[in-house]
Structure formats: C-alpha cells, structure tokens
Length: 255
Image (cartoon, rainbow, N blue to C red):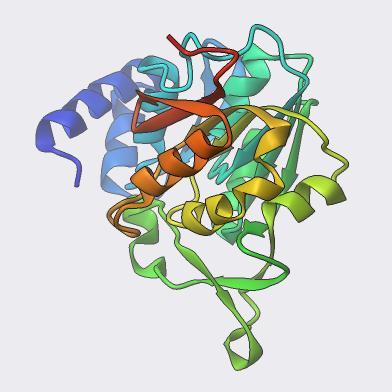
C-alpha cells in the first residue's frame, strides 16, 4: 500500500514532468499519458491510477538499478518481469551497445512494453513466463491489475489452459532458445516465480555475472533466504539494494 505522503511526492514529481493538468488526469482516471523522459529522450506511456509512475521514480529518480556492482560494459542483459519496459529503457541507455532481452508474460503490460521500447533498437521483447519448465501459465491475481500492476502467474495444464494463457519455459531453456551463453546482468522481478527459477539455479547461474532480484516473501515466505543460500552454494555473494538484492560472483566483489 502506498502512503499518502508518497502519493503526494509522486504527484509533485509527475506534475514537473507532464504538467499539473495531466498529473491530475493520471491520478484520478484510468486514462494514459505520454511524455518524453528527459534523461534518455524516450517517449513513455503510463496508465492512470496505477503504480507505473512509482516504478518510474524508483528507476529514474531513486536509481534503483544504479549501484557500484554493475559492470562498466555489458553485451547481454536479460530482464525477466519487464513490466511496461522502464527497466529495459534504463539499461538500454546505460549500455547502448548491449543486447537487451525484455520478457513479460502479462498481455496488457507486454503491449505497453512493446510501445515504450519501440524506438530502442537494442531492446528485444518477448511475451513469455519463466517458470519451472515447458508448458502454459495463467494469471490468477488479475483483480488488482490497475492498482498494483503485479500480475502473478502460475503454471497450468489441461482445462486450466485458456485463451489468455501464455507459454512458459525454464530459464535455461529460454537462454538456450535465444542462443544466450553469457549474461552480464540478469534482472528478476517475477512476482513469486523466483522461487522455482532459483530451484533450478544449477542449470543457468554459472552464465550470469550480476543478478538483480526482487524477492516476494509476502507471496513465498522465506524465498529471500532460499535464494541467498542457493547463490552462496554456487560461489556468489549477495548485497541488499533497492527493494531486493544484488547477486555477484564472489571474484568480482560487491563491496
């Protein structure tokens, strides 16, 4: 739940970018607003009465993904749970020579991701759910979509598969299918699916230099501790940052 004081700060920040009138429209209706992000010069669209701008502030104002452990240069970045594309835009601006693969399972989020990244040549988007294996996944928490933008997916089969289901795959299969043998930065914000992804860490973790993960202990109690323990077993170190923690190979160090 967002506090009133934080909502006020968000409103003031948004008004500086798009004007008071548009900020009021954004805060009180479900209409979308579009503006040019000043740092990257990218045209972005947000949904009214959503947490889109909250995410924007975290990434571009609070610099959530800007920490000393990031590599100076990168060739490949994989963004799992790309949402509407804000993190992909950030990484594309920081690493203009890198190939960025942005993955998002939710249909509405994916459409906005596609739109927000349409002008960025080094971002490739893919609608897929990264889970435990090949099959289908479906949303089971769509009621709060516009308020929270946190769409939770779970694997389904048989009669549970419907027209809104999305293909799912394991992370190692996704990397193999896209010919990705090395990942400089892997971002994971997948609303609880991180548990099953890290359960199979031995299959893929050795390909990654830096992993930025936002765990969801409210959905999967103890998942943070599980991820940290798993990564330490594979020679990685963890350090808190933003709403999650960074995982870096011990030989690189993270301070």
